[in-house]
Image 1 (tube, rainbow, N blue to C red):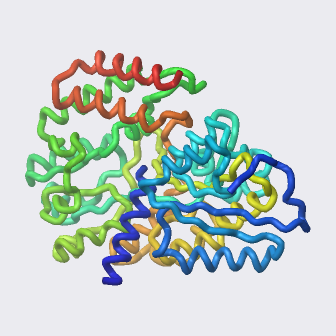
Image 2 (cartoon, rainbow, N blue to C red):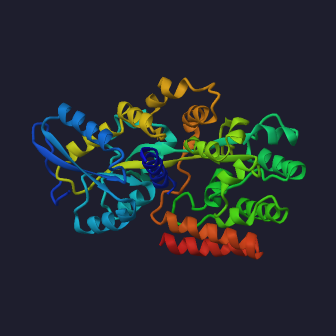
Image 3 (cartoon, rainbow, N blue to C red):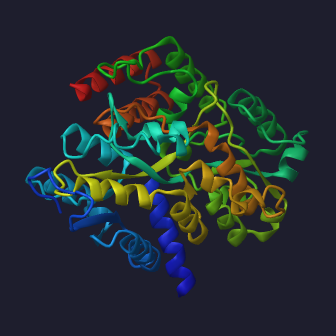
Length: 418
């Protein structure tokens, strides 16, 4: 039962990632002034009660004038609660937010621009990860915990197709996929989100000034046409386009040669087929032309209307410091956003591990150097991504003309950016 609860907690925390009491006065927070601040998290209780309560106790011991009141919010209530609280000025002083909600609240002016207040810690974080907290010219959060994918591959399947190593680039991955399909019947490469694939391969979705759609461009057209051909050639199953493909089951049944996913999920394959897991290994994420790797990011933000901005910012920095992030990473397979934490032996000592999941932990931490949130820093990014995905599906499944699909996506994105 304990194992089941832990698994459910892991599933919840990574679901949060795929996606990654205040009052009217802004004065106060002086060094010797007593302050009580609230800390909102998303679905971390009860599994991580000991960790969060312990961290709060440590902070209060170091800062006896500051009291932290923790409130955990179930994931399915977060959007309603934060947007309602933002409208009434009742947000938590310090909040755990995914990047989507962060940008919505930043656009509403509900969270504090931390650009000046975080200069002392900015360089502690991976640069590409730090940028996830940006909206236009402001920085509205400190990055907290992360998730990114690496590759689990079947050595035996690759050998049958004539390969000793897995692909390292998108171009190589698709070339190998054709051969693997011909020689083994298995699927090689699959791409989960076209709205991530496009910017990772030089096709912007939104203009550089973030004011208009940029998706109707030659590179995006080339990509849409290439995917249509791959789908028609049988390299991409219909279920993968619809988002219903069971990667773990397909890999365990040796119908999929490699799976790009967070290493914390590798053991799903071990549970389904210990034999297939035993002949598998881990390798770094497959790179697109931009050589950037998308990372799911959870952030810590501070309410614009907090009564105690100094105390709230101090606590936000404490939550995201290297010591606390490393401690969190040791109890749940997430990645820290602070460089120093990834240099700990917990990550570096598994570089040559035989177990793919352990080796994957090293690889995932290492590749954060190339990590970035590839979503444009605009308010309605979820709807924009959905619009792109829907047009992409129409091209592959309904034979929609790729040029028309990009024009329609452009029109929809421009509406969403107004």
